[in-house]
Image (cartoon, rainbow, N blue to C red; front, side):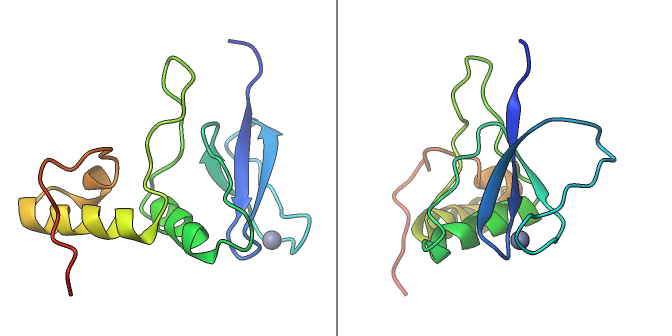
Length: 117
Ligand SMILES: [Zn+2]
């Protein structure tokens, strides 16, 4: 496998830093604001800093304990990126009774979601 660099993010700065994965207890600080960096995972692709909506989605996922790992073949796993994708999965979770943390990982929703309102 070798060394893999993985992403750590500062949510207030909307900044992502690639670092070697070290000890769990090692605290990483943001070079911009000195805040604590959050582990995002090796499959994380940082949205542009101006894309506030996409970063809001990232924040929601990380706060829900959902990271951005890669699959065994090295592809990033599916994660919703837009507010619309989050909204659809939230609605699906509500309708189906599936926990939100699981619904958010769905690439496809089994039915046409109702997005009106
Ligand atoms: Zn920062």
